[in-house]
Length: 316
Image 1 (cartoon, helix red, strand yellow):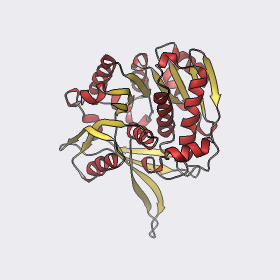
Image 2: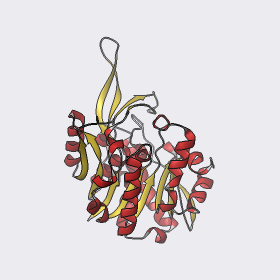
Image 3: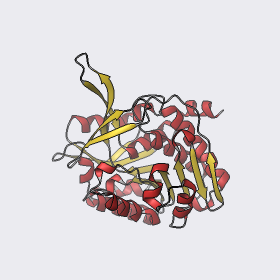
Image 4: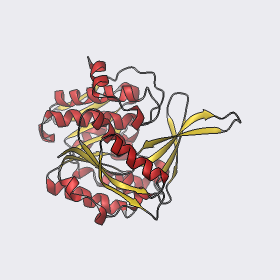
């Protein structure tokens, strides 16, 4: 039994690493992909996880598979495609740690997974099944995502969603909005950033956006507020949960690490989504904030995920 399984992109983040002696920009290879980042955060917190997705039959795909397995993540559902290259993302960093993305994904292997390739037994044996929106950008991954959600729902899994908007991976903002919103009614737990509120709901204000999302299906919504922490909302109401101060080195994986911490605390509560109280949601977000605060203090996403002991020391 897995605490959480996730479907989506697994890729290389080539992260800005300064300049060479000749004045050329250097990039450091880091394993990444939002759903995979979430799982690593969960593994570091002591939860058993599984990843479903696709990489290319190349050096990067081999590296990514070895990375997940090295973290203890089950890779039964990770497919290798001999005809597509592993997706790459080049991440340039601003002085404040914020990021600018450029993707090599035309097509990337992650967009090529089909419904027939899904490890349905892995999904069915998970307490929570998590997806993002980047597997909705292209076929056949979009149909595979919808099939995976149907499988998870039939198996009684809790459904989790983080839209994780990347403008340059969609043909237009309108298409992105339609696809990103289309799966919201199926979800039980949902996380988005304050910058994604308007795209998902038409509301810029996190409180109004969270309230709008609750009316569409999700039972618990968390909106990340950067260094400000997070806003959480459930049927009982909403609250802002302060973040932990951090000297940010690299914000890559910050939201994913938050959600990994949040899902870990949710799983440990033993509650169904509809049973989550506001006090519960605040508690889940506190662990998420602690994990995120520790993550941004190091470079990369997967390499920066903190241990349980580190998170608990910050919470103490």
